Figure 1 (cartoon, rainbow, N blue to C red):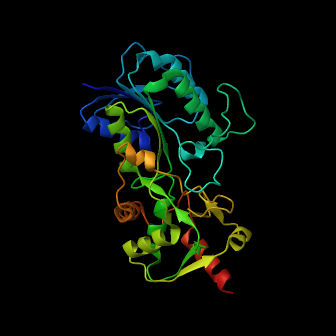
Figure 2 (figure 1 turned 180 degrees about the vertical axis):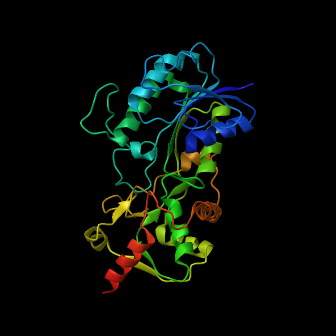
Length: 329
């Protein structure tokens, strides 16, 4: 039986990975703080990775696969120091945010990474990009050619805790025949990966010991095309009203994520962010379902959670209607 250790395993992505490995017949252990329940069928070892001795209960066992998604450089380095000698294969889930820039359209895995933050060295401000780059460097140093480094882009689908992708199909359904506010979409791009496609890739490549680095991203599409399909899936019959970057900024609407934002809208100067190459992912066997399927599943999830709920990303419907009224004046 395959012995798998998930560092985490109780969150959205790591929990899905743990469940998929369990479904594949593996003996799965999750090492997590224990503040959230672990998936059925896994062994949960409660430990705080910030504390000394966090890995005492998993050291001394031979692991066929270890999966880590942390962006805490100290946590990643400590796990590698404790476990690297007894692991057959290690999968580190990084991010396309590890790259130093977003100005090159269609960039592949050879693009420069951010200057890594040094594990154990406090910074004035946490930098996700540098942290992911540093974690990758630690994995390469400790594991070498026994590692897979997977760099997802925007992960979407049912259960998404960020509320970003589902905002659009959910908002179109809520608005029905009324207008919906959008950024200028003429040259904007969208690039997402369904969480289940990503999980399949991580588990399948872990099972066969794949070694390499891949951008786990979907095909880059015009944002307008994706929003048009989202409107169709949600049966939205109202107008889509576009507003420019300066107007939205002046009215305190943030890009990309967070409260009072328009998700997937990018500020100027990032032409390559939603255009990363996925050739290596496809060559390694990565699959991509149709975006309609992902939108339909996201809409079902949005309806279940409540179309008018308080969100972590996006505009509330009352705020959106106020903005639409201001735009029309």
